[in-house]
Amino acid sequence: MLIYRYITRELGLTFLVCIAGLNMVLMMEKVLRLSLLMSGIGASLGEVAWMILLVQPKLLVLTVPMAFLLSVLLTYGRLGFDNELTVLRASGMRFGEIFRPVFLMAGALFLLSVAVSFHLLPRAERALRTEMNRLFREKAPISIEPGIFFTSFRDIVLLVNEKTDTGAFKGIFIYDSRRSGSERVITAREGRLSVGEEMLPGLSLKDGTVHLVDGDDSTVIRFSEYRFSMTLAGRPPQRKKGEMTPIELYRNSLSDSKRKTEFLIEFHRRLTFPALLISLAFLAPTLSLRAGRTGRIGGFVIGLLVFTLYYAALISIENLVRTERLHHSACWTPFIVLTVLGVFLYRRADG
Image (tube, rainbow, N blue to C red; front, side):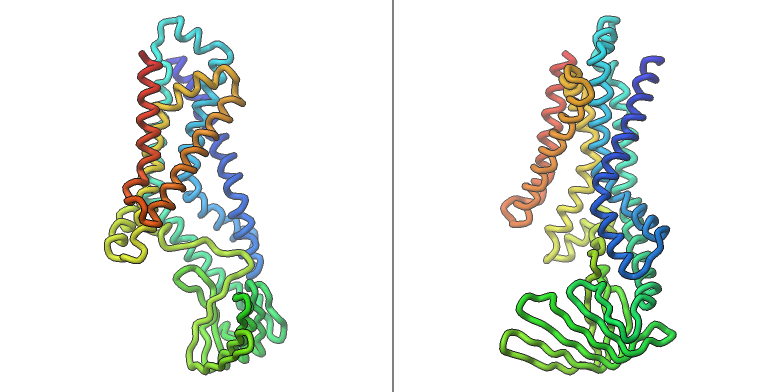
């Protein structure tokens, strides 16, 4: 028991360090994107920090298996490098007994990953959408001043003549240059900011005209109501699939034929990433024996290499599924290959 406590404590501490480091690395791009997005509408540092926290469950689905593999390789690699594994084997402990903490940790993390994938992730994504919707409604109208050009929207210049106490705008002028070779000038009597289904900000305009200029051709369209979608300087996180549980994803794949493949790919991801912990529980011990000859650095390199190859294979197969060259069940292929390889190497080492 003392040996197990010693190994489990080091495993746990190494796992926490790994998952914190991986989350920080993967979060850099999202932090920059959210910061650009929120700075355009004047959100506070605390509000940005809360939204960054809501992004964490999405990262955990990916980083928990990766951090688990790295923690096993680093911990047992260190034990092997210091000849502690040799001492344990010489004292009569079998291969399976030495790595029992790995399987216990894999079981606990598997339950955690299932909870994140099935429950925490959809709730966090919905909360993120709600928070961004609230901030946009409350902050964006304050940032837009009458008579001053507003350029926080990507490739769009917005000018309003008047702003009411309720947050509505009057006398709206919009210059849209998002399409190369085609420009739009939109004028409207009044409008109000809103957030659409895809978490894209926009203006609900009333009584205006759209001037379309495409090369030498121009068209004028009059409207009574018009929804003009925009994108802030930082693109907001996408919604839809992330807000659904795996069961909802599967149900939507049956009812929405146009997006069936995308729903099924996300459905398989939500299942395979938690299950990946079981595969790694068999693979990591045998890899750690090889990593032990090079110490912690070797374990770190091997862990990143394994996960990089796995993720590259997964992305390649998902792209083939999207082009309908493979059935959607092929998304399980990297997991199955890794599991078979892990069990084979484990039984070989244990024998």
